Length: 74
Image (cartoon, rainbow, N blue to C red; front, side, top):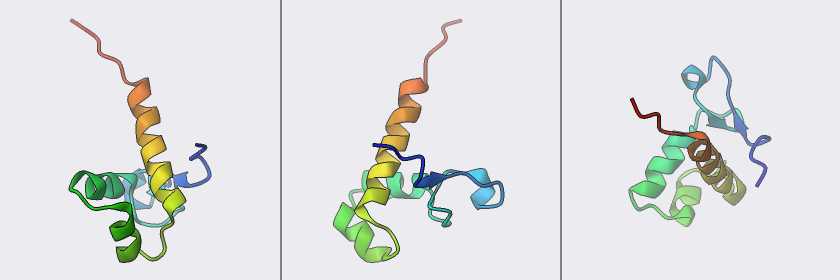
């Protein structure tokens, strides 16, 4: 999935954290809701401005960041 049109990073919105479409809802917020057990349907019900594509973009963004991480042994 190409999340680049959905996930935005702006210096003034919340402190430069990755957000959804310029809103103040961060990728971290969505990932935390999912990790706590909320379903996609529950998130969409609580945040009517979000779409299913927004949630998928958050997951794709997190997967892409994880793929770029590596461990350096000292």
